[in-house]
Length: 465
Image (tube, rainbow, N blue to C red; front, side, top):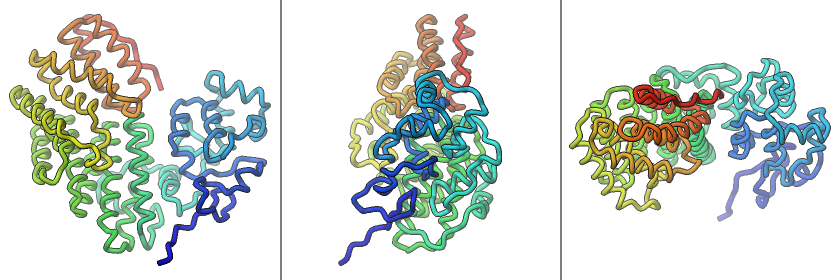
């Protein structure tokens, strides 16, 4: 049987790419200088290399990341890029290494020359400068264009979400390539969400979800239909959690609902459990712990099909609800069952989206569940130990979880132990929270400040972003 591979073309000239070339440019375009920047594909801008620079709000770092991106093969020399921007090499060197440039006119001109997508910038481009002309066949860029060109916010209601697919051309056929693009998009945005919070690019993800739902109307071979539902459901869950983190609760409810429908349509029990857990956490956060318990119980309906890690996640969700209800005995029992299941975990058996639930995450989630009874004088030492484990165990890829656990640890210490120690922890929490776009973290900071005021402690203000 002859093996066929997807045809790949150079992002610059459109020529064929060798199957041995893993990059986005052909050899000629990689080595031939150009007089001005070319329009880079969406994967370039949405790579971790560029997103980290863009999140710094420092144009010099963005320029440096642009010219050192691995897609170029070799870094673009400063002299060449300086010429594009009408600068000298020395001026560009100072911009890259010095303080963040603040002159808006210059920022707009440089961003326009480099063709940076407007939705990724921390300042607004004039309408005439936005990148409206996009390759509609490229999934990520089509999603970004939907936000830039229409200024449509997150969808309000499942029916509108499905109807808004008129903003993007609906493909006639969907297959493994499109499904893999959906998976990649969901993974990319979930990583961004965990590291930086859901507030910064939430509308971009919502627009991308509208594109994804259009795929459900396209033709798809029966053998791929469940995979398509699974991919759309995973992306919808990611979008829902970002809305939850931004405290846009109506959108979160609708997106979680779509994710659950997709998971159940595909008989995807692992995704179904994850979505129901997130729905439960959302309802608990919004003051409905009994509804959260009902959703967690619904997830346990097929618990024999889940991994120990997933069962640990669900028991922890139950513990959070019991904590809000003040049921000390039930909290402790649920945390114990969660610990028992997590002790049996075999990460290689877990679905990919459960990779986040490591020892630090388990410690943080159970610590949060114990927090509500700890501030009332029950199991304070155990709650603190778990929160400390989470703070020290989380890496930068889980910065939001680390920050929220730091805030909770400061609040618990402020309420039950040494206010001076709590102030030191709180200062670290404030500094970390200032790097996030997370309304949940902001709400927890508000709670910490309430505890601090009662203890007569002043905390620093978060830096403005």
